[in-house]
Length: 79
Length: 79
Image (tube, rainbow over all chains, first blue to last red):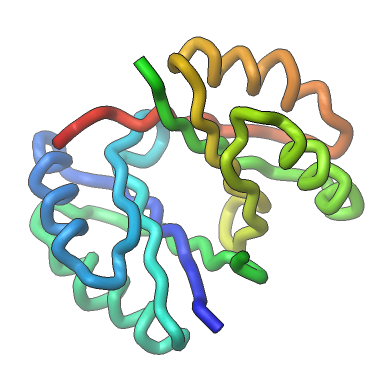
């Protein structure tokens, strides 16, 4: 079963466009958006296992230049 | 111009499933998912404009039983 999570991302000033590009280069990132409000970007990631989902957040997304903080929201029963 | 928006929603536990049914019946709502983290539901809206999305949130969603708090983020069109 495919697991899905939304990653809410806070970014350093001026870094949103480049973060958006970097997110779209990650295979498991199926959707990525620049948004207004409390968070700056929203990424939807999908994988077949929880470990890969965690690695994408901790390694790939946290290593993108300009990402300052993330909040992970796992989807229960993805359709 | 058509706009996407995400509504992050806190909801009363016992009302979540009724809320999902009501939300899924609204034409401009593309998806409703239960998530972990600081919010209970993530709702994706696709409408003609940001104003239409905000009207939907304020005039319809806020009136639904079980909605505690919402946080709306409009998607920016950044390439």
